[in-house]
Length: 170
Image (tube, rainbow, N blue to C red; front, side, top):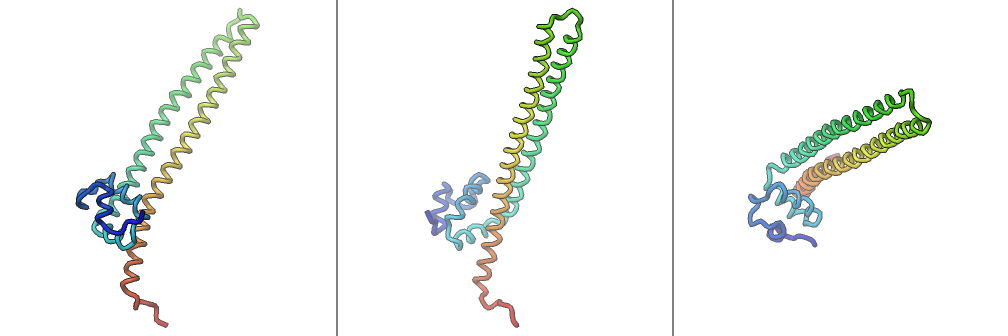
């Protein structure tokens, strides 16, 4: 659907005035921009002196959320690593007992090997999580930057359309 005027866009956003455009609706508005006539989008965006600030806030919010997630993840991973170290230490101590049967030694060694495999799997899963998180942050930051580029690029296009005589002179 191509939005041809502000009224259609406000109706789609469920607002009756641009003053009621919340951050959530601003994101929705930005997602609708490719489906708007350029002139309509520029006319609307020009009404938001805080548009640049909104994009900056969106990037800052994503950065803080990413850093908080990394911090919590680091703490969680340290607890997991510590737990595996403690389990292996207990198994080592059991293995050092002198009166163990061959079967008991084999069982303890298998326990040490299994905790090693589990530890590696946990680490691999965590790396996949971090990779996915990083990709989401890159997409989010890219979207916010794209909004800024659309805004600035559209404004420049509008200005160049208004001043066709402003060409380079030889």
